[in-house]
Amino acid sequence: MAGFLEEGKAQIDRALEGFMPPAGSYPSRLVDAMRYSLFAGGKRIRPILVLSSAKVAGGNPEDAMAAACAVELVHTYSLIHDDLPAMDDDDYRRGKPTCHRAFDEGTAILAGDALLTMAFELLCDPELLQSVRSVDRLRMVHELGAAAGWKGMVGGQQVDLDSEGKPPSQPVLEYIHTHKTGAMIRCSILMGALAAGAGKARMRNLGQFGEKLGLAFQVVDDILDVTASTDEMGKDQGSDAASGKATYPALFGLEGARERARDLIAEAKGHLEGIPEGGRLADIADFVLLRRL
Image: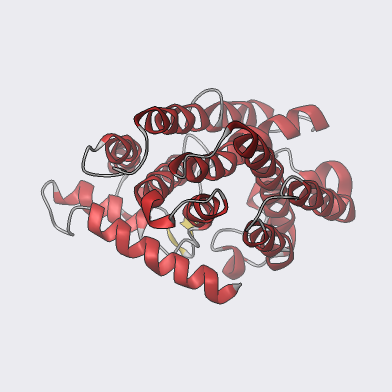
């Protein structure tokens, strides 16, 4: 699995490099900030899920590459803005100074804005995704916009901010995790399926898989915030707890959080039963659980 993920990361990095303006392009400070955050060493799990989902749905992963890159651009934008002083006020991301620390706050905001809008530029480029039906390309734009916006990631971030310093409750916690993190994981799965022209039944099963996987992903992140070192996390250890954020370990304890993550992965894999080639997505789900726990 590690080799598969490394190969996928390299493939996606090459594609992203092809889409991005070269270093030093004018306006150079903006472009350099965009590239700094995009090529800061992320695992590319979300775009790998796009390509894997396309294959599971019977398509060619190469036909979904622009969609995969669009998802990663949105993810990187979200990290830049999440780290800002007005949000989580983090100094490190992936072991490097955050974008607003390496450049400045204004440039970081603009770099995030540019990456977000570039994602939709890729999805709408008539030279890209030519094998995808027009209706499915429109659905891609809709799914990504919904997952990234107030119905998804941005809405989850707002509830996360509102909940800081308050006693956590399971309904609020699951809302935050399902929307702030889970929505983009689910979207990644759906984008690949749409690129492959999947039917309604396959879309439904893959979407349910993505929803459970996304929630499990964030539960494990909560656990790592408590158990992993700053070097392992690439950011300050215990930063969520220090900010008074609602987390699964805070609500259920470490063992309770681990049990919840295991249950969610089992539920996610259950939605893959009967899907040919579904084993690759099941392997990724196991990797998320075992590697990150």
